[in-house]
Length: 99
Image 1 (cartoon, rainbow, N blue to C red):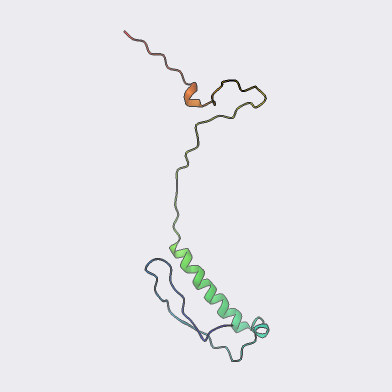
Image 2: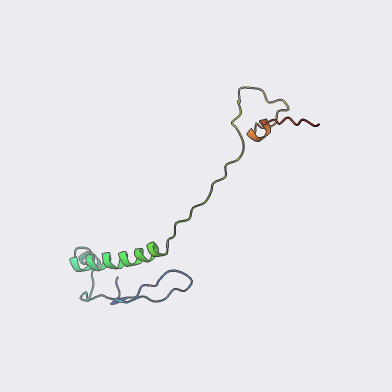
């Protein structure tokens, strides 16, 4: 149901034991009664926020550049007869004048 002491584990490869939280709830503990106990609710919120706080500290913002494929949509109403996909890079034409 709930131990007399909760020792959270920090995140990451170098995980360590964090500061223990003492649970001073009377024994025997009844699940139905605990759900209405304000001290239990406070302890549960405290432990949950500490565990979620470890994740917030370890979380980093990663920005990635998204490279989209170089294609254009095709008209599916037109018959496809020996026609390669349309790519903007293929549509660009250059004229080279040799002297």
